[in-house]
Image 1 (cartoon, rainbow, N blue to C red):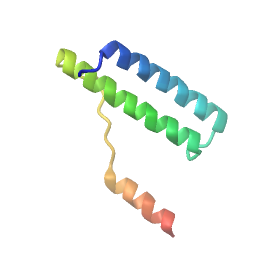
Image 2: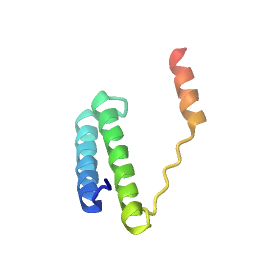
Image 3: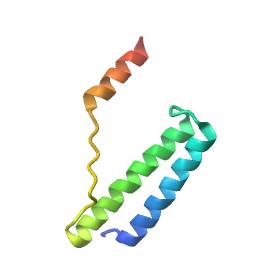
Image 4: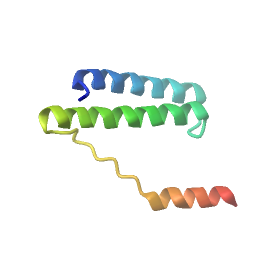
Amino acid sequence: MATDPRAALDRLIAAAEAHLAAVASAQDEDAPAVLDAGDAFMDAFDTYDEALFERYGVGTPFEIDIDDDEYEDDDESDED
């Protein structure tokens, strides 16, 4: 069943607000609450983008480009 774009947008806005609250209270990008809120924000964004595309054939104007090599380098440096 396709997700309603309006419901997905509401979830995205709530996730953005939760992320802001986590960042404002923790003020540390590596705090568990900030990381969890960031993950929820990204999931909500993906859901909204997919809902738009499924319903209207158009997605958001944003592309999230995650460089896997960058994250692998970060993981390796954590092991040192």
